[in-house]
Amino acid sequence: MNKEDICFMSACDMRDKIRNQELTSLEITETLIERIEKINPIINAYCTITFDLAREMAKNADEAIKKGEKLGILHGIPTSIKDLMETKGVRTTFGSKVYENYIPERDDISVKRLKEAGIVFLGKTNTPEDGHKEMTDNLIFGVTKNPWNLERTCGGSSGGAGAAVAAGLSPLALGSDGGGSIRVPSCFCGIYGLKPNFGRIPRNIRHLAFSDLSHHGPMVRYVKDAALMLDAMAGQSYIDKNSFLQKEGSFLDALKERPKKLKIGYSLNLGFLRKINKDVEKAVLESVHKFEQFDWSVEEVKLKLKKAQKTLSFLMMSAMLHDYKPILNEWRDKLTPTLGMILDLAQKATLSDVMQAQSMRHEIEQTIYQYFQKYDILISPTTSVIAPKLVENFQADPLPMPFNLTWNPAASIPCGWTSEGVPIGMQIVGRKLDEKTVLQVSKAFEEIAPWQDKRPIYN
Image 1 (cartoon, rainbow, N blue to C red):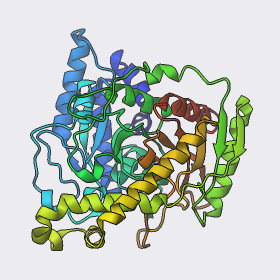
Image 2: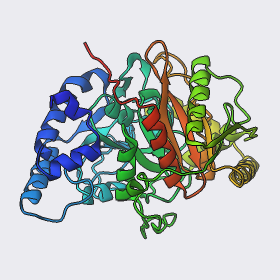
Image 3: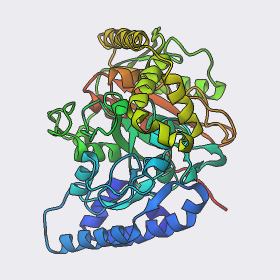
Image 4: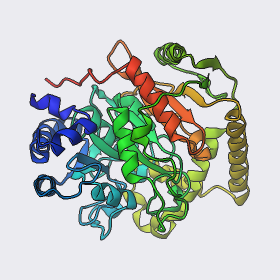
């Protein structure tokens, strides 16, 4: 097996080869480190590397196998962590000059669980300041580029994570999603990303802005790897009051089954989008009807998710102002300009505005609840556009946003490519607490429309 094939191998296959020592964790880790050293200067996916730590963890993983010790479900698998999650003893900047030299004394719960499951920690991936936008750049580490087209954005805010997976620099990546931040970069980078049901994966809540909107989740190349990663992180924690007990069994085991009957509705605009890229529209329409070969019902639906973008943006903006107010006078001139503009706008908001946004959120929740009384799955484009060029003024795409407000599990899966070779993504949304069906539908689509044979090429 050549080195590039190792870098693009599924995590599940890595796990099996590491356990039988067909490949050691250290061999895989060294191969990935070599590729990161070559490719990362081009795309800037990693902002902080932990190669010495990774080598030590990989050696320990191999030694544990030789000793016959109990192994975690991610034993020896190299993994990257988004720079919005605290990592004990490793610099965590949140993409902000405010925290440029911050070294946490604890791991985020999700990071801790990944370590307990046996990962090898490769490093931190780049993110915009406090994850506030869908283009990944900041004043510390600069811009992260799309692995498929270096003139285009990789998306955000988990853009470094998406770029790392797409470029073969990490088989598993931990991302977070407060309004599309897993799904948008997964779409633009041509990988699979899952925003689980809110509370499925517990978190350490650092800011009010992310307290009931942001979800941690896996970003991978293979659907089965997302299920494996979810198995490692899911379950209640006393630290996160929104987390809940895991009762569904193994998500990876659930992929051995395919639902016999499903009723799928699709919408290209979710009732509020005015314009969509023609390549995106064509790819999603062709893709959604492929589900009919499983004897699943597929029909277009008319949803009216009014003011979803305005609602989420306003709630996030108001909470961010609360979080930054104590340091705003001191740090205003050192913030990313777009974040500063958001905070300036938030200062003009009134209590009545906040209450109106909460009321609109309730209406959206009721609309989605009523939809899932009739349908099992909702399909839409992940984004209405293809990855914009880095020089363009890219505003947040509204299509992923409603499902942060409603907490439904939602995934982005590659469903096509433009004539320029840029990926297109399809969003798969499930009922609350039903990641199982989202993953099963994703796996079914992966089997009939695989994409993993495509790899970015760097001259």
